[in-house]
Image 1 (tube, rainbow, N blue to C red):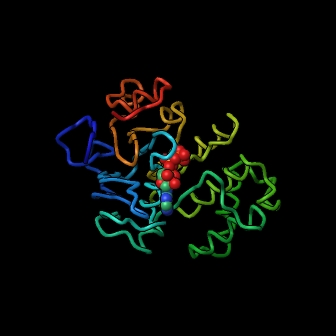
Image 2: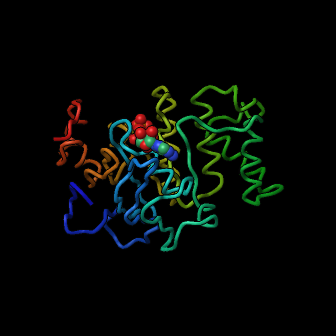
Image 3: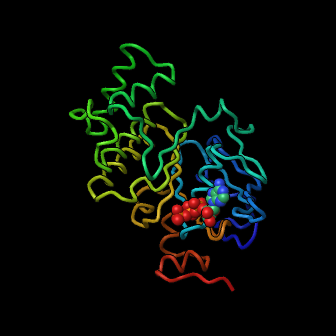
Length: 259
Ligand SMILES: Nc1ncnc2c1ncn2[C@@H]1O[C@H](COP(=O)(O)OP(=O)(O)OP(=O)(O)O)[C@@H](O)[C@H]1O
């Protein structure tokens, strides 16, 4: 691990919550290389059950890549992703869900998108119908249940994608800039869904460029720069009093130039 600023410098890895709760996900020496280029280096972190972790950093820092590696969408070229202490596999991935910046929705109605996702989880009949109604209501989309998902507005689509992910009752929800193109009202609605999900025990890992959102949602913050963790710590501290030069540069709206 290089140039890492931590609140607890002696710790071998960051801990999303400083208590004894179960470590849901751990990365050890995680890295990714392609065509001779190393894009992610030596990422060691622990995400504890019930925590909310925010990942920040400039464009191209490797935030989405890290999220996709943690979710098993791509395989690391270096190191490991452990889920509940074991190598992440297909079974472990069923307990995880991810919401992307551009929602990936089926060419079906809003309701049918939920029906399909719940069907994959093995939900059927009345129970499934109940869960669909609940999810539509949570997203404020009950009146648009039969509208094709792909003609919904950006904010409506993102709310649908979020409740669809949550309807599957994942243990962890990864969100990659879920409100990047949304207005303040839609952003607030998504943040509310995230906080409610977390209050119900779902662990949150979120990538954002929005310091306000990081402050509202984050407990722990990971700051990435050039594929490396530059700094980790409690979100409020890292946002207000960053210790690493890259995080300071971002706070001050300056371009970070490596010496
Ligand atoms: N599967 C891949 N194969 C090759 N290169 C990749 C892959 N995934 C990411 N990259 C490259 O890795 C770098 C980091 O990409 P990533 O999308 O993780 O950045 P980011 O921090 O999320 O940036 P942004 O804030 O712009 O979304 C980029 O240069 C990108 O082109």
